[in-house]
Image (tube, rainbow over all chains, first blue to last red; front, side):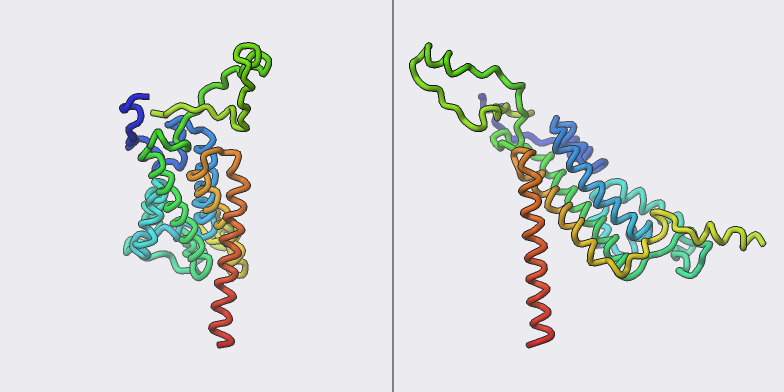
Length: 179
Length: 81
């Protein structure tokens, strides 16, 4: 390998894609399996928090520190903007006992769990974005596998060299530096 | 009359607009959260994807065990000491 291929690579577009949709950055780098797992796990966590606490868990003014975690997934920002449109012109949420309210604000443990789930999903997405952003080709996690090469049979090696071949358990781990 | 007709629809649960009434079971939500943390962390850290289920399960069990230990220690500290 040359020094050029060994140098770490920065993937800003992939990191931004990962912010828009969890796992999309890994998908753009060709890691489909990792992308699918990240999309499913982070997406379910975020969606779970949204479902448990309702739209009221995305409140930039109500809990700005938690919202910093939530905004690490782009859809949180869109939901927060939508949440603001549901409030009264004075910026107040509907009363909890009002059945005709645009939404029902959450309180107590349900609100805490919704905020915790969505913020945690954002922070986990930050980990995924950082994993996409900086790629070291020397790191085995960041290598792309090549198609499996036909393995020489034991008889072929013995007849050619007279030396018994080394059979490693991870013989299919041949990999190539990515990007 | 209009408001009476509208009442059943407005009282119905509206997903993502209304919170789930699960105040009594909030502690159970710890389990999916721990599983998600473990899976995401191991997905990023593990070099081979087939290792993820086993390693994520171990990590999730460790997190739950240490949280239980911490809760027990705090309970002893507050109730018995």
